[in-house]
Image (cartoon, rainbow, N blue to C red; front, side, top):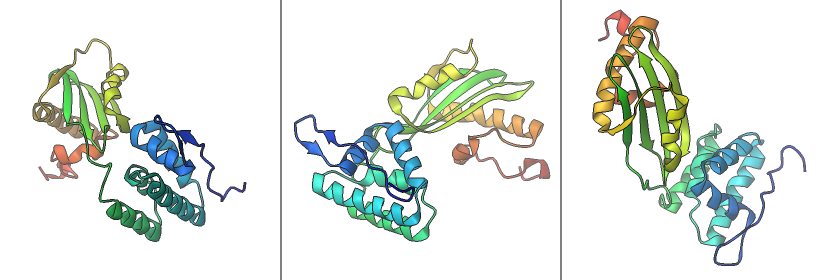
Length: 220
């Protein structure tokens, strides 16, 4: 198999019996397993344009054959597609599927520790199905944000596990998202005034904080 050919995924077995076709298996996995969705996107992104087009066609045809929605797999491919024509093809496929499989089954939530002097936060925002994106930060008033981590795709059941990557000694509790955002907005203002930029990953959640491009130039 040449480097420009699509990968050959395994054949899965349905719980109720029968076999799922190669790309049907990827579609099923991408809908329930963040690692599978990331793996699919990564493998797809490494292929040439012609091979990527064949992947899209195979996903669409197998979804129809298996009677499942192609949307979860297509949204993973769209995230890494930079060719306008292929992106349009994927978007057309999503429109044809009517967004089936993309409705989120979880709600936004936040875990907060400490206060504006010293603390941490975990913001969890729904994407589709049970998939969420996570922003985890810890800070100290004297230093600003000391730890920053962004996970673009994780299952909601594993989201709170990101607390383990923040400093010990912080006691996190479920809190209203708006309260966590209010505390974090103050922390981020202080951090940016001190360091001149925002911590990595925050830009994906910037719409929550209303921080303008350059507060040092009076755009407050």
